[in-house]
Length: 150
Image 1 (cartoon, rainbow, N blue to C red):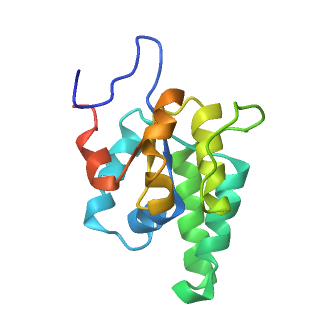
Image 2: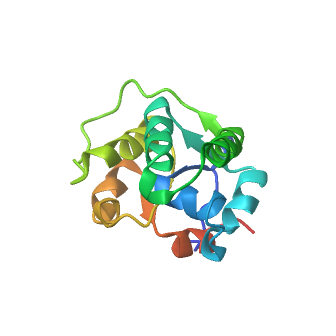
């Protein structure tokens, strides 16, 4: 089996990024997340839903992050321009994430046909084996970077 994800003949790779990975990529400019610049421009469909965008906006506005409103708007606009919006309606009974705020990422991945969730979140990473039956991998940014198509 290949070490990286490859789309089937008529499909596009679809990935879901959790909020902290998006912040690492677009706000903190963490070098470990910068492979997402290439992912966003190389034909990988980065997916978001109304729920995941709401979670992102809630977190980015958190006073603990100390991101001023103009910078928040800039980051949100950059993220929204990089993603494909998918509405989540029907999905099978999924494993429950210990953090209810993260359940929307599982729902989006399964309903949107994403093959990968990129996260640093321990609660999501613990569900790694349980999501495989839905054909969804959960990987850390470092492992996801290694899965980029060549």
